[in-house]
Image 1 (cartoon, one colour):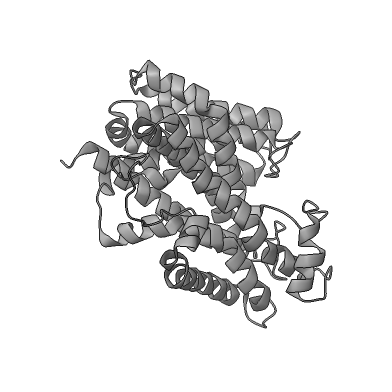
Image 2 (cartoon, helix red, strand yellow):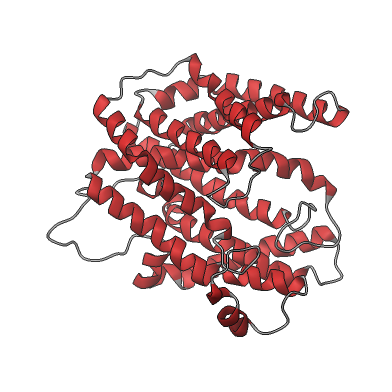
Length: 385
């Protein structure tokens, strides 16, 4: 068997790349499900509702668990100062640059579509964006970059506890209790969702803030546990059976009214399902994705810039596509394909080739080694948080 640390980083990198790839399908779908988004098509695609609802429960939780694991691997190899410096460059810098350069086109096209602006983009940027009035009342926002913001806040908030756990030593053994970690997530949703609905505003977003904070902690603690990945692999079939049965029961219950929407059973059941499938992904990922190849070598580096760019590209292309007299499925296919191609061109043609763009998109800048470095040995997994 290959070196354990190499397996660990490779399969988590694969899962992170896949999760970000799925975001293209999800955010393209947001145009066509009638949930209310930055741009929406006049006709919906009803067949997307359940897949979108399931994807909403699975995509971001997995990314936060992987990010938490990445924090463990990074702190294991770095001093506190180097860890904070690296996370600030990797998270805070792309967030700030993104709020000024990446996100504003999304708001511009939303205002155009809703008849709230009729001028050009430059005038919009100067007279609206640079007034720094928070969205939605104004036109300054982090939009999909909330993920980066929350991760950075979690780093600052959890650092003392993470250091304590690191000193304490990885002596917690995996066991059946891990199956129960979905219940705290469900209790959090049951108590807070109706009071603080999902908003990604940081301040007054306690349901979502706590939800992803717990998942980040889960990832950090689990990564510290000897044998955790092998254990998750061993129980992967039980996780899959339990998660699938629960999903079928929830869909049946919600569709028939046996389980009321937003009831305690809905909240608890949905979060247990979320956690069981996080275990499924980790277990099957360890079993089948513990390898490196040229595709992962490229995609691992590309995934973060793709994440930063993807929603703006989808909104921009979507604005023009939804005005065409095409069927909803044709529009979906055009937006999805066009967005993937556009992000590929932007990344491979621009971002990865210039040091300043690599820096502001959270990538490692390829420079000759200096006399002092924070990381003595580069390692896989450093891009996970």
